[in-house]
Length: 487
Image 1: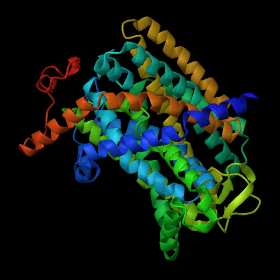
Image 2: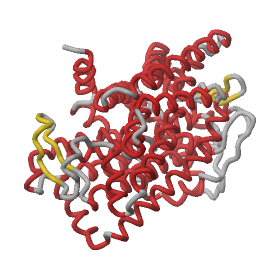
Image 3: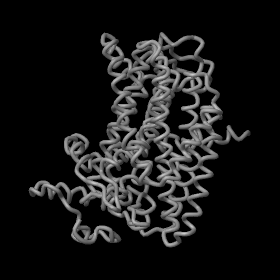
Image 4: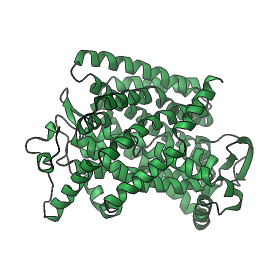
């Protein structure tokens, strides 16, 4: 068995049906426990984006939102959606919506825990699953294992799929050799990651809103152009999701699998990645960041991923393949040129080009560059945060390890960026799956603290407190030294 096949086998086992069930059931459970706050608190989620300001120790809620969103909005929103449709049919889009809706509950819990147990290192707030596992579960071995897994996933396994998608898109649009594109991406990444967390937050704050809004606007234009096909497109998605579409009745299992896998890859709810950004914020109550991070799941999947799916489906620029036999086409979209035998960014590029000739290919390539590049920046921040966790009392060693991380990450960003797309996705899935398994189990064990914090927040609001403040001693929550004093 060659190396590529080994990677594929590991990926399939880590993200099989037990993983799918765990992700869905966790989100549903937390949504019920918090009385479907996704709907009740939607208005407040948006308001909280602009409530806090950066301090000497922490970034603002908006910056934390953008830093997390820069990790969520990436190649999964363009190439990932196209892949989900190609292997799971249009019904995969429905299951992406489902995992986003219920995943908001999971995102709230992990972000809140990250805020509760954050700590100040080198004058800056740091936090994430390793920190709340150590402090909340009092289990240093579990926490260390998560930190190591995250450093490996974010520094080695996952960056390459972002660079890979950029390379493929630029090759299709501008005929640029993938090695050149991957090399440029690696060079730009080197310039950014040696600048530190504040530069990363600033770049994400400026670039992410611009790229996401522009992308959604283009999708809206295409929907308006094809408005008469919108009802049939929705019917196709729903029928395919439940196997009611005759041609796709045999792929309903893959619709669920691909919808959940690519949905989770995109919105990262439960993966344990976004809590690193959530912990860095300066807020008066942990629930503030919980709600903000839940909102970012909506922005990622219900807006950006949906924009991609609608453009591809309404333009007919897709083809559904038999996952067991890549040569067997289950369903043709109707407009995809016969010469196109692969799937990924090219589907979205052709979809935009079909409606806005001469514009789509280049626009999607540039959008994907910004999406994917900010995601790689976010990966670096998360890996760095876990190195700080491992060396909290050994500053000199932490700096040496961080420099080693930077070099290794740059090497693997280029290496995977020039490999086959399938290999890049399998590498990324391994990283995502490993982190999510560790994190989901941890937040289920720590749910009592997160739910107690949520109830405290809502109680203060009911009592007329305009800006609830967190007092962990009142809730009998320990190991929260950063919250002592008036926040």
